[in-house]
Image 1: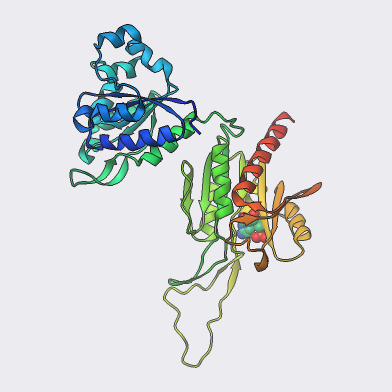
Image 2: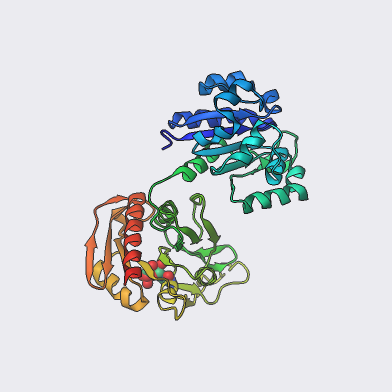
Length: 405
Ligand code: C5P
């Protein structure tokens, strides 16, 4: 992923400086070239020799290193880089950056660079919350710097809260996405996705649900984000981790999902991948429903849930340019799916056969048909990730056509 990318890594002097070794290792493993600059304080935590051995390049620390000045100079340093990463970034270095102070090699280079800068802060929780730090961070955000973390948790100083350096894997993943120069067909677009099941309560401890895992919806969110979109997922209860870099709104019932979807319109594209329960229990018990002594069963009464796809597909003024629905069926797939196109006012229906023997419900693969008013296209069996990437490519192409018209 990072082959031939050149990273200029600034290590400043916090206890987390040792984690920079793991960041360097991960970057080298992916084929990046790494040049390290350290603040003087950082060299108290990690030996420059260790880092120079790892990167195969001398570590730079001194502004007035005459040989360096004549050979490349501090102004030249970042010219050779694709990205500047500050990890860990102490409160002190952040303060200098926010105020344009250049009194050592790292701060001077940071003032002289016109390359993108990724900052991974690490400091004591009270230093993090200090109004001065928060003010400096706001300034740097405004200046267009990128941030990762800090993580929340236990710190070296035995205090808990935000201030831990993000994990090296997370920092490297952020570096990857900043340096990703693949085309971004959905850049500037907002994609709203519903995913997962809904839970419809019977009483405070029981609910009615379905077997949706949320995997296809979440995979679509990952693919849309990779295509450059701003992504909002409105998700029912699922057991999978939320994708990074997307906004996630967690809901339980169809009525909550409906409200959350309404609140997050407008969008350019809506993908309704949730398996929304068709009904909710109208006579929901306020207390746990008890077994009856005479052996009789509670009579549940149902009421229809709002049809969220139809709400979006027929919205008078906030209808997205492209609305994609799903149809999970166990019989008469094409017929049922085609009927839904018109009924819900959606542009495409992604239909799949979820009979138990297909293993699609809850599984990692999917076999879909794209149903449009004038065509049906059947795709081969593939992973849910692959389905997502291809569908998002199609969505990008369709948006281009809509805009051209
Ligand atoms: O009507 P049916 O549930 O089969 O339709 C499936 C499609 O409609 C899916 O895209 C699903 O997310 C959406 N849907 C919805 N709200 C409902 C029922 C279904 O958004 N109440």
